[in-house]
Length: 254
Image (spheres, rainbow, N blue to C red):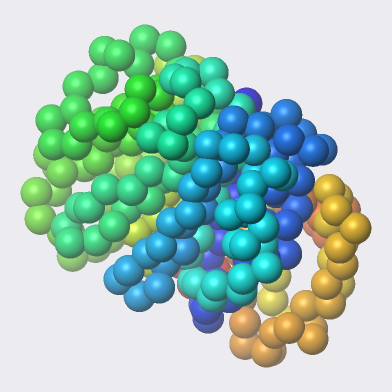
């Protein structure tokens, strides 16, 4: 299956350290060699980098790894294809506009019977179960909320309920963000960690790389990282339960 990586922070933060560990799993320490992608939010805008090549071999991934783009919301994905061919249009994350905002999504897992999902307002470009599920999710949300709701938390609660319906079709681990909130939904394998003062050191599992966060942060920084599997071997990651959803905003659990 694929692997996910997400970040929610209260100040613009780069994800170079975590991404350095994830990209190793894309063809080096892991089998996820069928493409990768990452989306960074900056205000109302977002920038995406994608490549159908393995992240371990991708020159674009090496650029992202060394280029400290600072963001408060990030979603990344490395793919092990099981639905849809290996190509750029099938590479996560996927992004669509809703209520004048860019919603970005990535999925880990495999669904059955997903072709029965009807998409009224959004349509897939590629042919993966993941993108079709995303289009269905947003179509259902737009049906319930034709205009942006005053309480965004209620919209994300509704999305979490829709995720439970998709989980009934198979394995559905998911990250979704509008650039402010980051929603994590776990079907069978998703972990998270919140880093805040007092900061310590961390060492990657998949690469010989260590960072002292105390030297890279201020006492007010709060950064949460979500990943399919823990990326470091000397920190305490929280494992989510099956069917559990967590909504993050500015690095903290809403």
